[in-house]
Amino acid sequence: MFRLLFWIALIAAAVWLWRKFKSPANNHPAPGEQNAPPMVRCAHCGVHVPRDRALMLQQQWYCSQKHLEQGPGSRDR
Image (cartoon, rainbow, N blue to C red; front, side, top):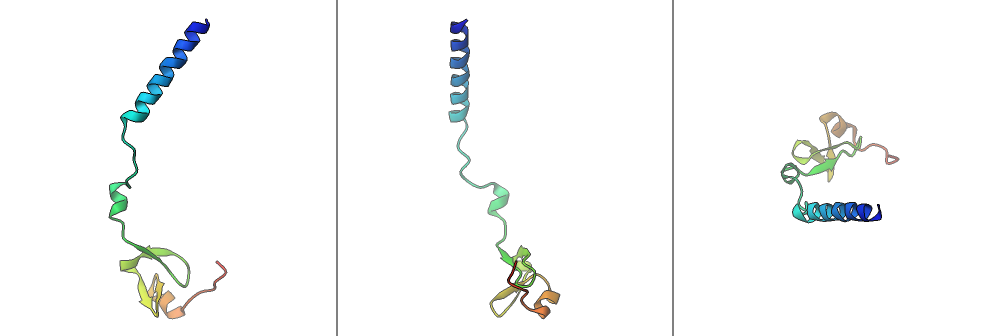
């Protein structure tokens, strides 16, 4: 019985090692993440929006014209 358990454990370890080293490491980001635009945070509400869709006034970014007109929000968020 001990020999059977030993061989099952040995085969399971061999299969695990083979699968681990067979596939290459996924250290690079997914293709969709490479093309993602840079994000900025709205100074009024804190929502993150793509920089190309945001509005900037005096070194601060805003998500909409309404928030740009209202100015920066409270800092307790």
